[in-house]
Image (cartoon, rainbow, N blue to C red; front, side, top):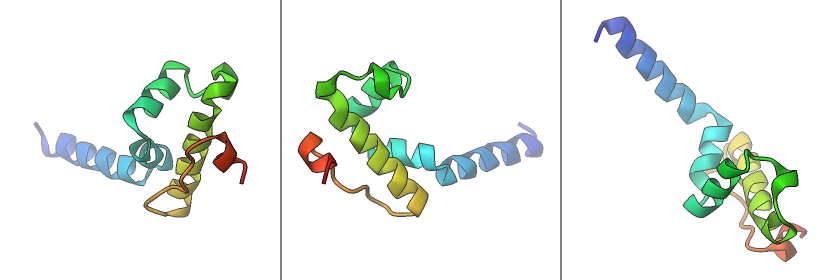
Length: 82
């Protein structure tokens, strides 16, 4: 691989480490992430019983944008509304 190709790979890795969406994805459980990816991150596609997953995603995304390492815990709909 050329040195330009290696530099591009490094830049892509650095960008992924700084991208809030990628950081937030790393904060979610595999189950939550699979569900969100399956539904295309569409809030309207979630059942009311699955809204806690959406609130966990929003919490992780806000934490990533704010530079925090961990999202505010959201365990159920009750906690998400607090």
